[in-house]
Image 1 (cartoon, one colour):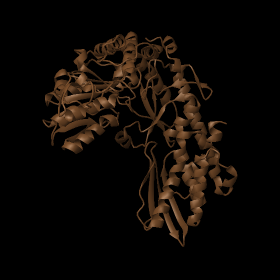
Image 2 (tube, rainbow over the protein chains, first blue to last red):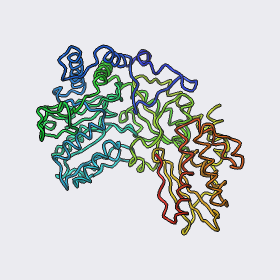
Image 3 (spheres, rainbow over the protein chains, first blue to last red):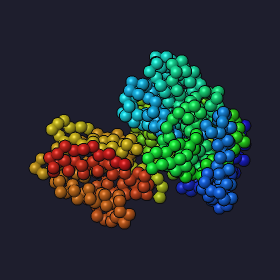
Image 4 (spheres, helix red, strand yellow):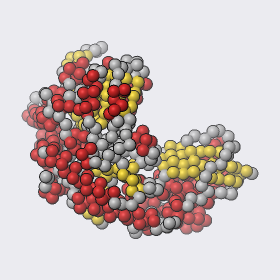
Length: 411
Length: 155
């Protein structure tokens, strides 16, 4: 069990009032808040050893290089990658996925090859493949969702064929909270020889992952949704794939030797890290990972399961509220989407904000999923290690306020 | 001031619940669509122009209370008006929504529209109120140029 009261003390941003009311931050699926250890690491880097890495022959540069490279090992341990070189630092999840689409897809896929996506993907795990499809004639196929808002894995056998070269799937839906059975999907994909990319943007921060156990080929995830700063993300890949791929971005740092007309690439992971990276942000990201490791990802998941269960119970008691997603805490991470019948989610969001409750409202970068759900958008509450059940009560009170305002006329 | 006094005033919610001139008109009425993709607000304006006046109008809208109420209030103001009078109404509405020092006295004959002034305190919602009006601008452009209207997509 997490000691939430103690955890909350580590997050300075939580201790403030918004519109005269104590802040309830239920938007961690957009970006998580940062503990003091992460903020301190950023301040320490910029105030005591800011310098460029991998090129300096002076003390500060050596210190920064060591701190930066050390995070590769920390992250490798966190996802159980076989070696730190398999960890490529990008600027966010989107860049990590683009890295695979441009560096691997563009090089190895050809017309008629198929990529299997799911109907619950975030645009970031959709658009890069659409571009590839338009460029190369690669065919996109879609794993449908069931009425329970889980993936319809029964369809997998039909969808996977010898033409399937890649399955790109979210570990957890950013709209529905659905936790997908990625290990099973990988096993199925293996039967046709397809590679698997997991979009871990929501799954890794909330449930962690063991890349050797799941046996995925690629994994993309961000720092900022798991207590770290923005500007840092991770692409994990199997070494033989990273070796074979082309770099996505080119320029400084990613080269070995350069002539006027050609160049040779640096070794993995540096081949993928062109230009000066977000050094301080990566270093502080290491602190975020350590913070989560100290809590223990099993405890993090258990805490979210409990708060999600409580929230699902309380939300289901609110009249006229439609709740999306599996509604089963075992199958659902700390994300709940909902809508009032006949009240637009932005109106819900504005009134909740006035009550001090921060949620997200809109299409959540998943417009195809919105069409399947038959809505323009949803309101979404998402939880993390610093949220408490009493805050769920505040959300429920605020939702009653929404109803009160909208029922005051015309009914 | 509270969210109820600023944003969710009774008049606004009444327009949202009971939108005026709701519906569609068959061709040859001009149809112009508008959308705020980020919010999911969508609407279609159907206009008939006779003798330089907006002789008939229907609006089909799906969106938040602010965009729907703004469309409904707009319909009340512009129906039956000459095109240049509509231009003036658009100008004054945009002035009210975008200029922080807008002069409320000049809004008297704009009907319920002045109740939308509170939206200004919620910057992310201003574009909700603007959507029907921006779509109307595109419609008038199409009428005057005799060219087909383009869908208005707000950022």
